[in-house]
Image (tube, rainbow over all chains, first blue to last red; front, side):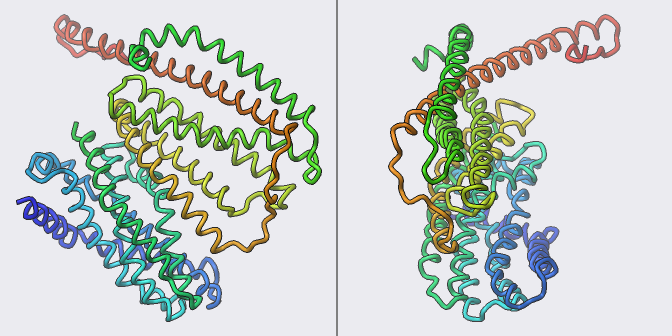
Length: 223
Length: 259
């Protein structure tokens, strides 16, 4: 019963994200454009680009994930669906988890899948490309979950978008450090295992804690 | 104690008495501390007179962390027991904490220039204090980001708790990042066991900063309570004036708040 409701909400959100206005397309376009802008800023030398590629790719992915966060709860909050979700048999914690999972599948996974192509543009060491893919797949769930908390906290605030980025960016420091660290280690020919494990630990810690905090914030928003 | 103070009227009475004491005590203690730090304490054998920045920098750093903990504890009390003053205490303390964090960063930067030869290094400690500063800013922005002040306070409480869980994680990851990235060139002063002649001014300054925090917190909490009172009075008068006028003249009158 609860599982069916969870899956129904997950499928609904995913379908909305994929069919409605191209949220996913926008996120990927933003990711690609941000990465492409960097060579204009730091110069076209391959060594410089290859050296900074892990950081550029991770920062750009992080900003792209941030871009769509305000859509996580706001449409449902405005048209009243969120009240219905809160009243349904599904606990609000699991409802936020379903929404974050749908956000991850519609933004984090496409970002990770497109990243190898951008790694080639930036001349990243080919040994690091598999690690880049793995680190984004492991780390982006944490981005969606932490972002879910911030989105729930800022629901109904004035200027939600700016507020959201102010709240979320300091909390994104640990995933950024371990994600970019793993890719950099791999690019230097060192094993990225420790960074990937720590990144996984962050995601696993966020998995139970973030939906809980986000649900508490949503209850405040719904009054 | 906590439940006794929960009555805002009683809090206003007690704080009115406590406030001048805190304020004057902090003035006196900081004056003594500054004398000890700037004049009485010996210059460092390595850093010379520049070491005196420490007497402002280090207590400010302690305050920055402790006030964040204070905000988090007050938020937890507000969430769990619905203590009416805890939420006001949390939101009043945050800007003071942000100011201490800024003092810590600015004085550290001024200290770093003669000692390290640069205004800023991406040292683990500096970076985590910078992140703490952003956490403060996020909290302040969120608390003031809602039209309904009660909503901002409740949501801010949740954010403060999220932040306090994240603080050790951020600290740990920044340490990790720093050991990976940084060339081991930054001057670190090994581990000097601090001399008593330096420790005493440091502790006096820390006590002075704590009293200053208490005084500023009381002022801000009293202001916040008065603001709420004014808001409630205005809403009441607007609610009571408007319908009467409309019935007298048959046209909607201006709300009383605007007059």
